[in-house]
Image (cartoon, rainbow, N blue to C red; front, side, top):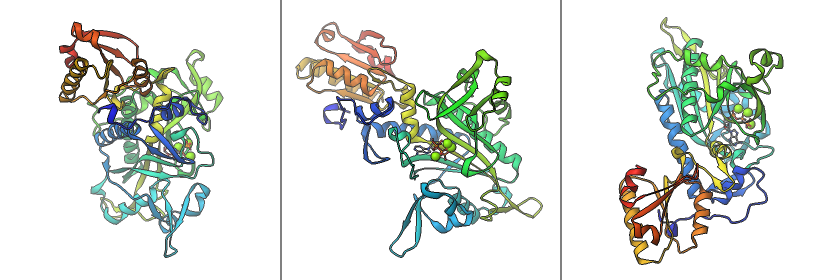
Length: 438
Ligand code: ATP
Ligand code: MG
Ligand code: MG
Ligand code: MG
């Protein structure tokens, strides 16, 4: 992508309305635009990051055996009356009436709708276990939308729903999601800690919130320090096998949110030098809630014994549009964002130090074409602008590698590579640049 023809509305000034660093940086780097309170457009650079996050989530959901579908954003009120949540949900729900005066709502979550799909098609225990997920926009009329897309009203969520014959099977489904979540956040460069959590309005008795430690987090959390650098299960994890050892290993170390913490228990379980009491951001939440929805909505299958059995369910959410700012909270410096390679909007940026100079332009074009041909997702800063401003933009938008080429390097046949994260610089022959980045 040539920056001269891209749409990257970088802001020079620090936006006054933004209280936390990720919100400031997302606005300054031209990633998002607020359209109304809690409603955002994702501009091209931000959208690229969001889609990279989405791809990682999909890969790990699929790996664990979950199956993707897509449900609508608008739902019928009658469906929610079946579970009893239409009245219970309160003001956070955006209620809509169509031209025929029928009642609808903009979905804040999809337990009811997925249960309806399930009960329509699935009739036998032989079709279980089943886990269906989608990645779709949700709406919650938050009392206080704030921090940009961290707490917006319309937000993109991955929500998965598991269906099983028994509680034991449902717990196994929960464990699969638990391990999939460990892998998902780690691949995005995030250290997300599963913490025992309150089940809230979704209800149920087994639940973990996935928490990123950050000073700007909205909740207080308590955990064992060893959870911060525990090795993550590998790509070869057998999701058909027994995941309980991994689950037990992770949950044996104390971790709880403020609604769940018991100070005495915490202090007894964690030695003083291992105690972490910090602010945290909730980037995901998983629940096992048994028959809370399947019972009133009559979602059952015929069991092996021929009897109708109400299925056990769980639900598993990740806020994609919250994960993006959470990554920035965890990874930035005074010059801007530092993207982990896995979610970076571009893998590298080529900076032409003397746009307009025929030789430099030709050398940059050649290198840019070679890097593209090698399959790298490149940004090429071909603009006629001072070098200082190009460096500032590259640092601000946080692309992992900067390739810097000007007349001087050209003379010696060398390109400079700057690592955004460490600030390290190395010079290498132009002919080796492609091999170095691949
Ligand atoms: P919070 O406590 O922050 O209000 P929640 O507990 O209400 O979140 P859940 O119902 O557990 O949220 O939804 C699953 C996930 O969706 C959350 O873990 C979070 O990542 C994301 N999420 C929820 N509300 C928002 C929001 N207003 N903006 C962005 N993401 C959100
Ligand atoms: Mg909420
Ligand atoms: Mg919460
Ligand atoms: Mg939650």
